[in-house]
Amino acid sequence: MKKLNEIFDPMICDQCGPLPVNHTQNYIDTFLSLGFQSKLPAIPWIQNIGEKLFIKILTLLGVVRYVKQYENSEVSLRTTVFIDEGVKRGFSFEVLKGPYGYLNQFRMKVGNTSMIFEGLPFSAPVSSRSAKADDKIEVKKVLKEAGVRVAEGKAFWAFWPLKSLQKNKAIAYGLGLGFPLMVKPRNGSMSQHITTNITDESGLKRAIETALVYSPAFIVERYLSDMRVYRASVIGKEKVFTVERIPAHVVGDGTRNIEVLVKEKNQDPARGLPKAKDTTLYRIIVNSTTDKLLKSKGLSMQSIPKKNEVVFLQEKVILDLGADLYEVTDEVHPDNLELFKYVASIFESDIVGIDFLATDISKSWKNQMCAVIELNSLPYIDMHHFPTYGKPQNISKALVDLVIKRLA
Image (cartoon, rainbow, N blue to C red; front, top):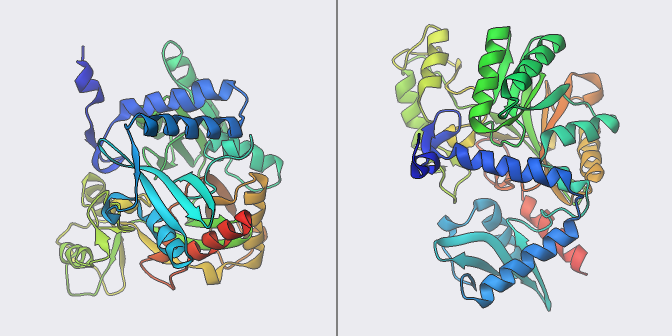
């Protein structure tokens, strides 16, 4: 039997990115967020008051304190880009600091008004609907009822003593739905432990086992092939900013090998080390997935790609593994803009990230295969400020404008 410290010790997992993670903690989070919380009525304003009261008590006890001076490298860039814009408009900020470093809680003062928020303003749920924004299966149900296209799928719990039964039900459901399929944790993020383009029963079984390493709750859904992955961030249900996310790759020049191309790309000062908080883009990570992808194409790190040939080094659009961002806000079709605003309004969210699959963002969603995959109530808005390619978008200005509007 494992010792307690071994159960909670972080470990390296290719499915999660380059730094050590703790899957046991993910299981605990799943039970808290889905196992018990889903059985209770969602009353966000009570939850928000309780959270603020808890922080107040810790502050009075001296366990945590608000500080005005802090290191940008210790605070998420999605927050600091907003703070930088707010300071330009006369806002002042303090960050909550505990005994082991900065926390993700902030206090903002605008004139005589004070606001406490986590990560970004307006990210806390304001209704039972907005409280469901981060639950993939609830999002799927709500959007389907609202007439928004989603990937057909179903959630399963596979935990003792019904683990085998639930796994068999998931396999039967997937076979009935038909290939290709995708399996992903119900409450995961950043493409962790997701398996895409599953084409047979053995692959489905392996994908379920992969998801179960991360969480006891997982989703089996239809996989949409040959889709581009977009993130639309909506502010105030009105302003939309969109990036296309592309897995880590290099583009051949006909003379240099893949290893050299990776090294050159990683020398870009905009690319930070894994999990650095003050960067958006990260250096490309070469791992077992890279080897598998190259081998499937008859390539190795010493191969020389043809000029303009794109060679993918990762399967998933995980920024920590070196994914790229293309800013495409100016290319989004008007119908798609309205769709994103509609989704934000459905979930009563003043800030939300929408993961959207489509063949071409410049074409109407009505005239192509597409789907809203999931939502994020606390999106990384810095993606729009610091894309790999394209015109940077000042989404923070839109958020500051919304703060001023709401506090007026």
